[in-house]
Length: 241
Ligand SMILES: C[S@@+](CC[C@H](N)C(=O)[O-])C[C@H]1O[C@@H](n2cnc3c(N)ncnc32)[C@H](O)[C@@H]1O
Image (tube, rainbow, N blue to C red; front, side):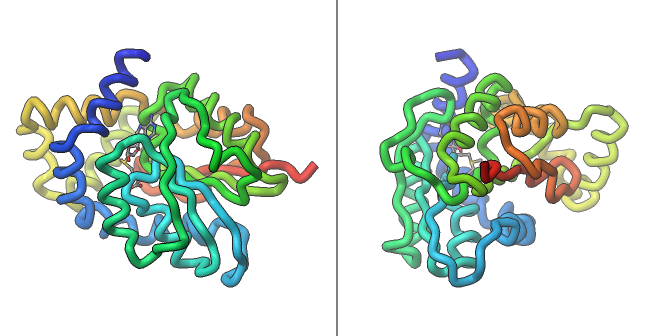
């Protein structure tokens, strides 16, 4: 295992990190309501369609919940490797009992669990792929492609890096206007917060190379379907033929 994969695993399997992450999740999610719903809307299903989708790096299930809400006959397979995140997710997903199950996967290169070795009708991921180095992003996109049914979609909601410092400055200006305490928070990170931040940003790369990796995996209709500052929803469809 690479050093960065080991660091990432230690972060996401730390009781203290998950406790802090969960305690602050509602506040972060308030700013994501629209994006969560939009990713669900992008899936090409009718409101009453019954289908099974996977949420990779599902954590406590925020992306899956939006899909389950929009499509009341859908079922989710939530895949993650953090026992703490999955335990928190089970608590928060009580209202969806019978419509979801958790499975364990290491997206850094582990074997896919048997529950996901089937023709999936959709795959989503959110705020997780950025933890993988680019060669692994590429491998993951290929593995997702191989498991999707013909015509099925993969969508990813994730942060991206700016290619131009002036663009980054504009993003930062807007973020700081929305959260006037942001600059102070950045300047006064504890050692532990700094380590988590370093882990968060380590493999965040610009949008275009990520779209290129999705295309290279074989997907069509590839686009950034939504973007606000440094957050995007991109994806594509496995061709029918
Ligand atoms: C920032 S959280 C996002 C959780 C959720 N998708 C959401 O949008 O709220 C990142 C999640 O990715 C998971 N994760 C990170 N690296 C992973 C890996 N190599 N394999 C499986 N899960 C991973 C973590 O355990 C965590 O649950």
